[in-house]
Length: 340
Image (tube, rainbow, N blue to C red; front, side, top):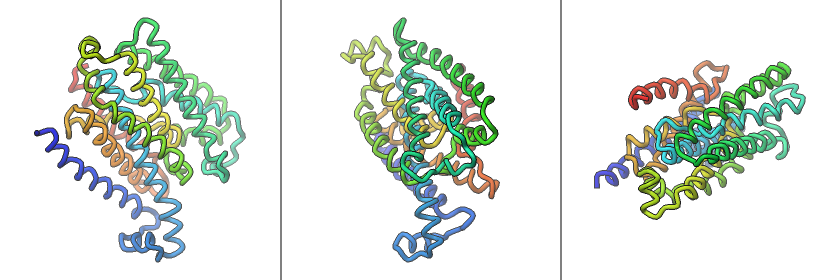
């Protein structure tokens, strides 16, 4: 009973922290807005400036941070379960590197005069970069799996192939960036560092159903992740079709991470630290771990975005940089704890 009881106490706390983080994202900024004015605005009694700032600038940004944080965290939790390694994250499958290369190709293919192209005016202009990035993420994950299966897919083989493909794609991206103009490089770097400052309702409406569907499918396979954690031999003995389930779970992880990277850029370390924190809170059972990781990821990215937006105002620090500032030391801590 300790596991369920602990989960019941953890989830309300995480939910409260998420509300506080989202509230901070709505209230804090270059135009501070108090809780009373936020409530009045949502009830339709705010000023024109407050409505513009809250409903058209901050609310979609907070919503996207919540969605992306949850998606990246769940993707990381799935990958850590599949490869049986708490140091795994969505970058393992080359997802970030593939999306980054596709984004660089998109930038190289068009002339960019200023940063207004980031938000665009039409549906096509808004979704062009996310579509490129999502396609690149999916192709990279497929490449890693196809290379890893030649001699039989094993967790460590996936890790090694993923590292090799990620570094290779990242090197190609760097070479491509050296051939771009100054405006193109500036545009690409904003996206590659993981920024959600160009968030809009189109991004939110597009990514929401994708993440909910993929997240629900992942939650339905939570017990299968627990069985995979016993090892391939034990899982096969229990009647699990290991190769088939591993392939499906990897596809779910790639879809979740790819969707997030497509609308928010390459936010590293979030898929690593959020599942690990959640595991310490609710235990290793994936039925509680997946939703707990989603909440931890949402809280982390919301707070990172608030800090990045206000720490050095009027200049923005990309949320991906803030997460990395937290994640890099935590990664070293995990490395020391695991002894690898």
